[in-house]
Image (cartoon, rainbow, N blue to C red; front, side, top):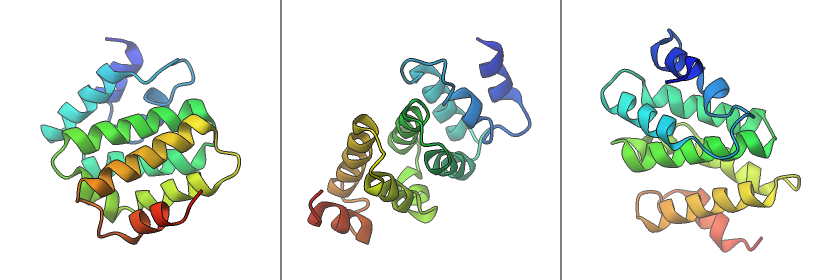
Length: 143
């Protein structure tokens, strides 16, 4: 296990370290082993899912670099798929509104834009988020 990963998993402020570990510009693609380790830590109660979701939300909007945004979106997807309260926390923390802003930003690159739309569509079609206006607005208004 690398030093950064070990620090992330053992450090005092684990959620804030998502910025450095998940979104490191050294990664060419998302680090699935780290994403799943984070999900395991959330499920075991070692990391707060709400704090991770907040860190993800902050990272999506604070950094416009695709090499940062895309891995964060993959982490968000992993948390929603693998953690019990994923949909509830994403909806409660306003992450979807931030994701729509990414779609509306003309400078968003295609792979990030597509990932955001795929996530919103999948979550809406699953029935978990179809009650939220963001799903309806995102897919009724053509882009």
